[in-house]
Structures are given as structure tokens and as C-alpha cells.
Image (cartoon, rainbow, N blue to C red; front, top):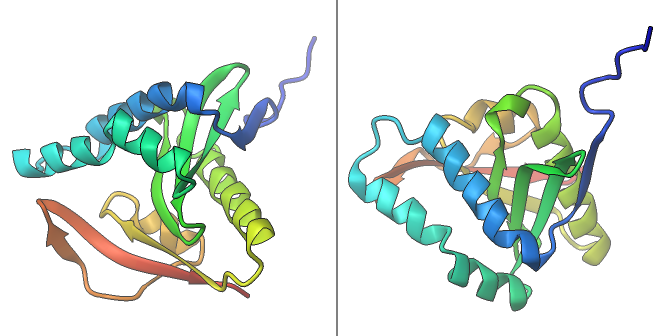
Length: 164
């Protein structure tokens, strides 16, 4: 009888190649649609769709403004993290089948380690969390730095993680 492997034993986190950006953004939209879009006004859905436009993101990725990481299970992309200017989390989305398995935590850790390796002066990283993601970011050590507010129909909670 074969011993069962831990849930994350085959998962790999690596920088996302630009050739896989379209697949990554499709995953982001799918997860957003499944977990965050309920009860949002059309304005918010349109705004989010515009923010993850493939050409726009590809341009930002090519300019070095955005860095992406992918989490893979076998060869399947199951999570995506994007950081802007090494200091702001733009996207952190994980396939629903992989929630609560440490994928988002590992994506975030890899992104933070890579960003610090590129710029050791980084002392703070920020994110505009959503009501859905707020608990996750709090567990990772982020703290709210401004009141919750609505922007283009999206409810956002500005949060920051201070380097130790």
C-alpha cells in the first residue's frame, strides 16, 4: 500500500512565464467569479475585468512593473500571485479546489522572498484586500492601515505587512 503524500508535496511555486499569463488571468477571473463577485454591482465586475485585461497585464509584465508567480500541481496552474513594483500585491488567487492547502500562503512567501532578494531595502508590502481575502491577509501578519472603502464598486481594505 502506498503512503498518501501531504496535500502540498507536489506543488511548485515558480515565476510565471509570460506565455502562461493568459491562462493565469483566466484562473484569476474564474476564482473571482466563484468567490468574490456575489452581490457586486456590474460596475465592480467591469472594473475587475478591466484590471486583469490580458494586453494591459502583458504590457505591465513586460515593463517589469508586475512580477507574477504561479503555483503548479503536477503541470496544472492552481494559483497566481502578482506584485507591482516589488511592494504591492496586485493579485493573489487560488483555484477553489486548492483552498486551505497552503497554496496562497506559499505563493505569498515566495513572492516576498523574491522581492526582498531583488531589493533588500523593502520594509513594507501593501495590498488592497477584499472582504473575502481580509482574514487570509490578517493571518499572514498584515494589518489594516486605512478604513474599508468602495472604489469603482469594489470594497477594499488597505493593508500592510511590515518587515521584521
